[in-house]
Image (cartoon, rainbow, N blue to C red; front, top):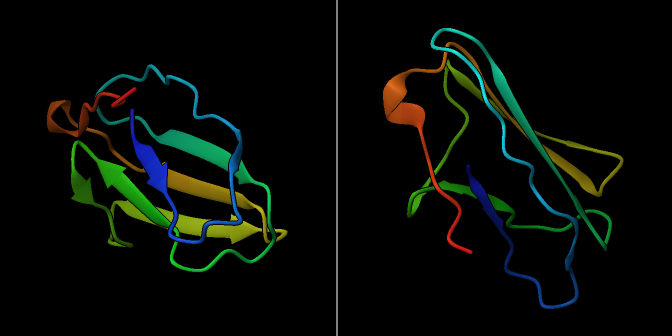
Length: 84
C-alpha cells in the first residue's frame, strides 16, 4: 500500500492504513487519521516517491484529521508495499 508521512512532531497516526485489494481499472481509497487537526505538510508516498493531486489521483482532508488518497483506474504499476 501507500505510506502517509507528516512533518510536524506533535501529530501521530491514530488509524493505520489498511491493505486494499482491487482489480485493474477499479478505484482504491486509503484513509488515515492523525491526532492533531489541520496538520500541515502531509505527504502521501508510493514506494519512496511522493504522490500529488493529478487526474487519476485525489488527495483530500476532512475534519482536519482525516486524510484520504483516492486512486482512480488503478493499474498494475500502482502496486505498492508498506515499509513497515
